[in-house]
Image 1 (cartoon, one colour):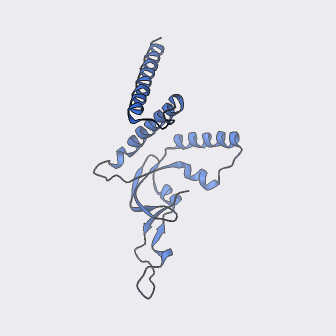
Image 2: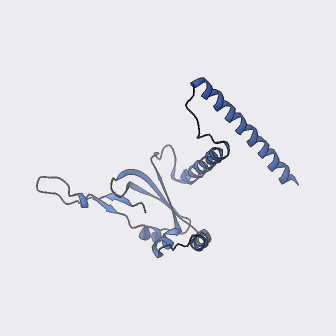
Image 3: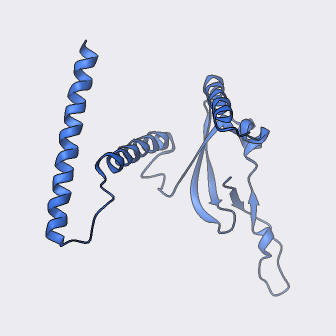
Length: 177
């Protein structure tokens, strides 16, 4: 439910010259934007601001899904509705046809075409750390001397490396069979 805004070119002003708060930004209608894109098309919203209360400047990239991708997403939503006993709003179901990426990196560093790839990589790394956190309890640490902490950390990292290497080898052996 994050809202995306653009600066209003013609805001209303008070008599003392201050901008009236409700007229400084214009909310972007995501459904209209989605309908203006062809399936598989990507666009970047220039000078976007994100947030309901504080408007934070961000780079916003919107990608319209293909019909097959949208159907898959709607099927997943239907399964989730049934499993969790919840109901998605019709607007939410309509908006499931787009992916929205928000970033603060400039176009020079990450071009619009590479944003999805970078986010995918980031999500994979995040999942990896969550796995480490749950299996190796790396988020639990008592108050100890810095030397012991370093030793414990190195031990945990070696254990993670060994387990990851073994899992990789097992996966390779299973794929060969």
